[in-house]
Length: 59
Image (tube, rainbow, N blue to C red; front, side, top):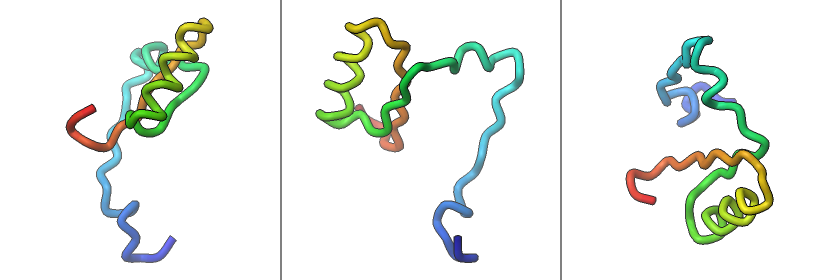
């Protein structure tokens, strides 16, 4: 990763240890666009615990 990488400019938040159970997923879908939303829906219908990671403000 270069010194000017956008990833290095992003703030990283820390989740306290007691909240770790709230973030226990079988699958993490990156992006809540049409494909991500449908994938998340289908996986939850099959019984998977699904989290969606979205960078935008609207989903």
